[in-house]
Image (cartoon, rainbow, N blue to C red; front, side, top):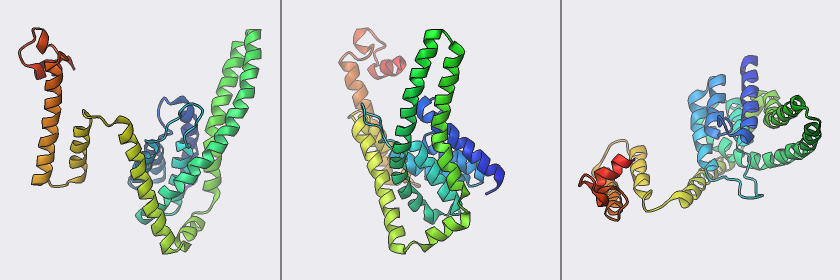
Length: 268
């Protein structure tokens, strides 16, 4: 990896760390972070595939109350760097995906350290607020956000220092049973993450869209079974909309155009 690529990777890692708190441009999302790292290192397509796999895992991660979800930013950046350092071979994608899980948990420790420091920064900002020093408040706020960026950038630098040959040698030295096991485990974690999302958002109205998406994504040639699945899904959607219209969900029950489904669609 060239020096320019390393600098760009560190910048992406820094932005991913800040976005883990800001949530504005979503640089911390695995699909975005891995894609950007692949773009600056010349391995775009493999890193997009890696980011997609990690994104399916991270879809099931959420902060609930005081429980903090695993660090998706560190997991995506670190696994992408390891993946690129190993040559971005497809056979190493499962290993990189499996490595992301313990890295995400390790990121919680770094998050705890940074947030503990942020508590002291908040007290400093309170004192500056009493003085009416708005410039100092802005400065300390920027410092706190930069600490979040360094939380990901510093581990990224540490991984980039490791020679690519060492990473490739380590992965090649792993026995086949361990590599295959990590690949299978990584695939299972992806499925579990997606299943958690389905359990959270799946309703009677949403299930037909899942069927449509599965057919369009998994079937390269539309067979009779695929066409039948699409037809059934569209039928269920139509019946659901029509039942809502008949129950007063649209304008059909209140002097509409006479087409309940059309009135609902017009409302949307």
